[in-house]
Amino acid sequence: MALNRKIAYIDLSKKKIDISTIPAVWRRRFIGGRGLDAYLLYQHMPAGCDPLKPGNPMVISAGLFGGTLVSADTVTGIAAKSPLTNRMEYSTFNGLFASEMRWAGFDHILIKGRSKNPVYLFIQNGTIEIRDADGIWGQNIPDTQKSICKEIHADDCRMICIGPAGENKIRYANIITDRGDAAGRTGMGAVLGSKNIKGIACTGNMDVEIKHPEEVLKWQNEKFKSVDGEGEFRENNQEGGLFSKESVLCREFGMDLKTVDAILNWIFVLYEQEIITDKKTKGLRLNRDNHGAAHELVRQIASKEGFGKILAEGPLMAAKKIGKNALEYFGTMDKLAEIYMERKPEPLKQINKPEKKISINDLPATISRRKAIHCIMDNLAINSRRLIGSDDKNDLNMIIRLIELNTGMVFREKDLIETAYRGYAVERLLCLREDDASKNAPMSDQYLSVPDESELFNNDHQDIDLKHFKGLITKYYGARHWNKSNMVKLKIFESLEISDLWPHRAVKK
Image 1 (tube, rainbow, N blue to C red):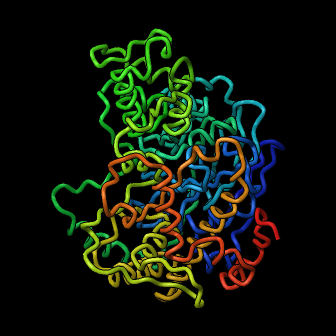
Image 2 (spheres, one colour):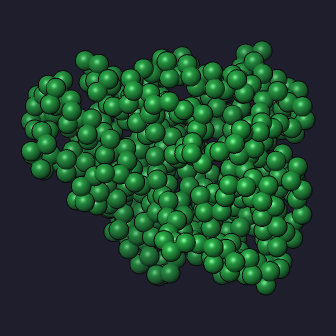
Image 3 (cartoon, one colour):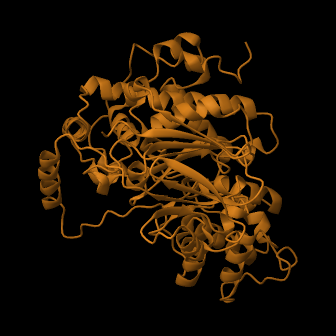
């Protein structure tokens, strides 16, 4: 059935793989997806760990609808502590990897430690192998995919992998799928590279039972009839304005296009203003008339060579090393903040009525009803941009109906709201713990974690003022009571049914 998939715990340092059944109580509390990913990271991530060290675990999740008749709308989730934001981030990509992962028998895969040598994982019908990747390490994305498919003798497998940017732990390196989608923006490729994992291949033919297949098909037919002539939903965090050659190069190396595009434009401005010179770039002329400059700089970033080694750390760290108030020339604060977000904020024009605030168990912290629906979609691992409309009530009724038709599980609206709130709360508590553990660490001021809510972007922030913007973020969480003084209490953990995560280890008693 749809609920009998497993969770795998992979310890690369010990070359050990444990496979377990997902407890029913976890399903009730989180459903799966992002909420359960946050819970698993809280359990397995040492407080204050370095995002690029073996202690930072990564969770790959398929969601409840992978491999069902809603597969076309599902995403695969990647969760870990981000090397760009120093917080837990959740990045997704479209495609059929989630379905293949469930057909192979798994809903969640937690990876910790670091392999001594490059490896890739091969998942097939309830088994997972750690295979040697010495001969593949160093290859670009297309060559990596061809090499792994050839080794496992399976042209029809689903795959995710990293390129040289991930191997070199570029802080905005992507994980790329076999069809070109990407888990982008927050450096998940760098985390995978820090573990010496080149890729993960997956193939399976273990059926996922659909409780009411005819009714699901009827729903799907009605849905596709309502799609307009464009009919194209593709969303993979890879939008950007690079020239075609540089775009291709970024994809082959496995780097986020939007981030690289913003950095290149910023560097050209700094060169024009003589804030950086040929001496700083070691002879590379970065004026816009030098058509090979962008191409070479992309290569240097991915290889962590020359001037690219500085830019590989992200704009905040790079600006500190460049000096001379370099960050002021990046553009607007909104433009900078978007690089540090896992996804673009929902356009304000789509929010046409006051947002209802909700909570559970009389807890002080609140989230908007709209945010709760997005959290539910993340817990189900569904592409919210495809399925969410403008009617909250209808959206929730649709989700409840789809869960029942596909899995037989019956949820009330109240139940779903509670899973959304609990998952968001665990993630927020984890971020508070990491903030507390990292506040005195070197370079802690060079990270930026931005909520993906629209309220923070009501007005354009024309001037880059990090202190002011971080103050807005603090006020944002404080106004909703998601701050340390309101949340880090044993009774809060008990009300959320997560008392097993107490004590909040980074907080002094």
